[in-house]
Length: 391
Image (cartoon, rainbow, N blue to C red):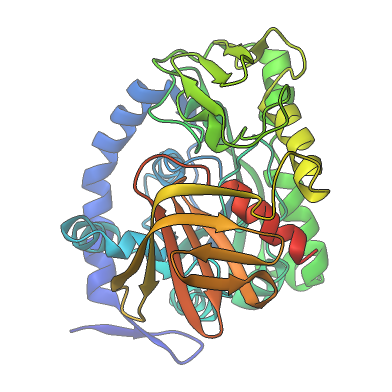
């Protein structure tokens, strides 16, 4: 086995790295053609000498492949959610082909930072989505505060990258894809010398500026049709509070419409706006309204704010093993998250996050749990209540 010592004293498997480089050069041809046909995508061609850290906006689960189109000549090490390592044979195939760097969502990710630095100091290219999650509403979020420090200390070149059209092509709340237009491009390249002259906060500001994308403002200008089947299916995962009856739980997306049991209904058009445009023109406006409602508990509810059946609770072990400990109804009050005999005080839940659209992850008192929906459910409303409890 051939190893290469990094400047930080760590070791990486250089023979394995060479294998992955060769594998990617073979795979690239097929990946590029597939993504162009599926998404009508175009991209910059980017190459950087020496170690580099690529930070991009996160808009969909397709982001790694869309971004990889721009890096035909570089093997990228992607930071990936830990849940990808719990998919059996598929996980083994992913590890063999691309060797992603695992990060537990809803945790601080210190081990992941060390893995990133090890690869960067060995001269490799690392890509991370520093917002932590793909966008729900079409707007980029701020990167983790520790991002600037990681970039500055890495001694690597920073590449900022932006995907346009990705959210409207494959929103995380939906099912399937819509064919419109996607463009992936480099925004900035910053040398290690430039980065050393900046503070971590200044680096964060540059990254936030470079990767910011507002899907709705761009769509107002470009007016690109995004065509597909069942384009509003599962929209209740993001727009969960009805503007007519002020209740949670009655909305359901089907075909190109989202409707409520109270009689409210609106159509999601190929231009990704609502028809009629009142009370909301787009998903962002709806989401902004409902977030304020949830923050103030200004919706119809009892002591239990809302609940969902057909949910499972699992404890996740240190080696990615998943042990189901309860199934049934998940619910939340102003004080606790509950599922069939288990109660987790919101004030003690340290971190919480959502994987894709169907898995809620959280850490509490040194343990790591997930709540998975057996059928499509909206996890985001639980996340918003927890975030407000920690505001």
